[in-house]
Image (cartoon, rainbow, N blue to C red; front, top):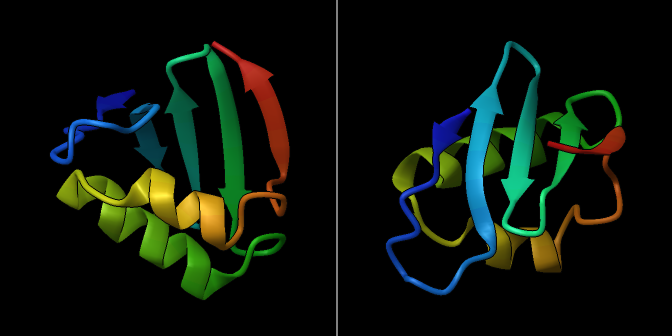
Length: 76
């Protein structure tokens, strides 16, 4: 897991893993969500990857856009 920079200082996102066509997003409550090109959409996953790498606005984006369209949910 790569640490999320949280440059805004108020995100519950703590980390992420980026793969070929997916992103895992890890939250402070020990849950993780898998977002894939197939289920969530390629454009949305690419946006999440960019925001994760920039360290800002990923939680906000997830709250507005693809939040319910995850492929898998688990704990870490």
